Length: 210
Image (tube, rainbow, N blue to C red; front, top):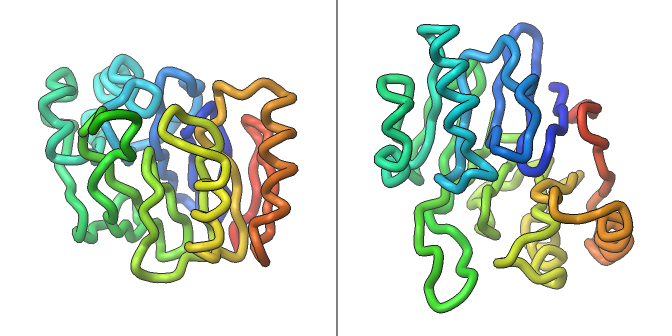
């Protein structure tokens, strides 16, 4: 499986003729959706859900589908029949990949806010995208996409998250608000992650998931 990093929290997974995109938001590039039939969205916030991009894709392709939390469906009426509700505990197939839905709630920023639904996706039992949460999945995963910068996140929480999940490898996401210095700072601290291999994927480049 190839994992291609796009802006912020967006990644594209490719294996043989299967292509699946997770969290194409307003900080990610439109080309992430090229040739894609199915998309996973963790929650309703624009940096993970760019409705305009998704509507445009659905207008070009009648088979286009977007899987997102049932509580987020009402925030995206423009998607119409392209939107498919999913909830934690579900397992389904998207673009030929097996997808397990975990978590359920967005991490708290302050005083109970934002208080919206957020699900994580475990793809083919291998790659875990947590969205805006630090939910530890019930089963081991080999590859973790670890949030690097957010108003709901402390550096020590990111480190503890990697240690709790204990993946073989981890790659940063949710990093559009970091300049180059901030990225280097975060990457340096990830030396404290334990036995997990860690590396940053430049936007538009890919790594092979083992």
